[in-house]
Amino acid sequence: MAKKRVKHSIFTGLVLLTLVGSTIGGQSGIARAKEKIAPYQDPRISVERRVDDLLRRMTLDEKIGQMVEPERNAVTAADIKDYGIGSVLSGGGSLPTTGNTPTDWANMVDNFQKGAMDTRLHIPIIYGIDAVHGHNNVYGATVFPHNIGLGAADDLNLMKRIGQATAEEVRATGISYVFAPVLAAPQNIRWGRTYEGYSEDPKDTGKLGSALVKGLQGNVGDKDFLKGTHVVSSIKHFVGDGLTEGGDDQGNVTEYTDQELQKYIKPYKTAIKAGARTVMVTYSSINGLKTHGDYHLITEVLKGDLHFTGFVISDYNGPQQIVPNDFRESIKRSVNAGIDLFMIPNDWKKFISVTKELVATGEVSQSRINDAVTRILRVKFENGLFEHPYADRNLVSKGIGQAEHRAVAREAVRKSQVLLKNDNHILPLKKNNTNIFVAGKKADNMGYQAGGWTISWQGGSPQWMGQPEKNLIPGTTILQGIKEAAGTKSKVDFSADGSGAKGHDVAVVVIGEPPYAEMFGDRDDLGLLQEDIDLINKVKASGVPMVVLLQSGRPMILTDQIKDMDALVASWLPGSEGEGVADVLFGDYPFTGKLSFTWPRNMEQVNSHDKSNPLFPKGYGLKIKQTGKKEHSR
Ligand code: BGC
Image 1 (cartoon, rainbow, N blue to C red):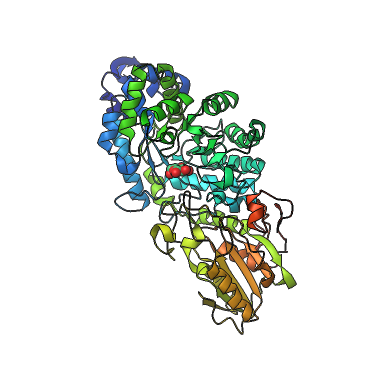
Image 2: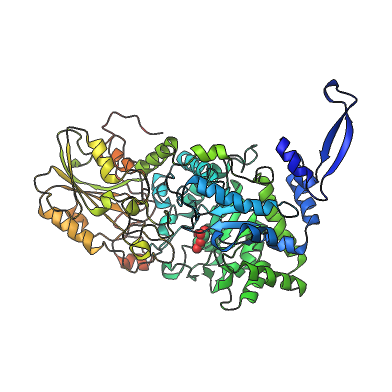
């Protein structure tokens, strides 16, 4: 407190130091120094009054500065001070230059924050990051299953706990804003972001996404809403990602009427009701109109019909796509469409000068700027940033990857596993006196297991950073999980290429997709990789009964191979806790996961959206009883 006072007392033009006679606590007559701070700096005053007060004090330059969000690698603390920048982001895999520990992160964010606190009005930045399955950029963080698996788990209480754990880990790095969750209900699994969606049904997406939002942000009306160990959430990508023609990433939505689109707007309505305070706009277009320039959707629908009072953020360089090669026109249209905060990673100086000019010529109104800045400041006040701009170092030391969070992730993994086939009761596996053969390099590799958006943007993917790394993140691989669960009286042998199966009681074969993320994940052919087909054939030839675990970001076409499998489990992208897979394989916990997507027989069904005769319908998932001694999970 004392420190704060000293700081306040140097605020130029804002602090009046007055000597008043104190009558408190019977100390009448004792002169005390009492500072008077500006209304916007007083946490006892309502957020709306604080916003009004601050806005009135701001110059146009200061307002426009608040509207921009550069990438951490393209901005310095001095820039933040000089330009009065409002926000900074880390894109996927954009890590501190000093290292990837929580302290490196907190130091980096605090350094930027120092620049903001040194500005005339001391307006803090809000730092944003893609914590889309846990705080996935940070080494040692708990990495939860990607959303498609959480859709299969379909457990609201679990979602809330995942949100809370993620928020705590994000706060442990001095960050208070995350770009999650995705509320898309992908209709074409060709799309490389399918795994970021919970379900093909927008109702489920809204329900599960809202529970995550509540976990991240806390409950509306509670004292600690958005504060303390909570963060601000950005639901994304408004709206229609997942509905594009051919499932193209950043594509065009042409097959939906306005009325049909309402179904996909609904999850946003639900999540906004649950308190979501920021909304990110989609790269995709609707009937050729880029949503970043869509006044109707952003201003009339989102801010109007949905009564959204937080801020709207653009996607990464999204505004510039409106009129390619015409920056000025693109910015004009996107500001006027109603975007408030601009994720312009590199060209942020250009954004500032162009926007200033657009206001000077009257092409953008002062009132539009005031609306944008009002919304940004409102969320910053709600987020408690003015009172606590810097990282809470107590959280830094304990937050990341803590055992309690890993337990939640393990629970999420086991609840996300969907049992699709189980002939002759091959599952659950027996624990004792069993000779188990585990096959496939994907059984023992954290890079494959965690998928995209893990440490790097694309994850440990071949096209992005070489072969997936076995030790990309700390945690337990599926193989380790199996070894632990099998018990000391069983034997577990492993072969990456499937040689040596003969003589074992059972084989567990792990196949799947290499990691990928947006822009690199769209596929015309979702058939199994040849290396996986070879692996299945090899193990099949040994005559050993085979359990296949498919580790993938979406259903894959395996109609021709399923007959060779005695059991099949959709494991999705489980993240750091491979033991969760073993938990259900050995019957320590029951299989409860259900498909949140239709599982097609072939690519024709994918391409024609034909869900009438799938390999497995949405909602499918075999149940087998728990045989182990552990308690049922909550
Ligand atoms: C993605 C967003 C993400 C942003 C920042 C964009 O390319 O579409 O989902 O939040 O990058 O990393």
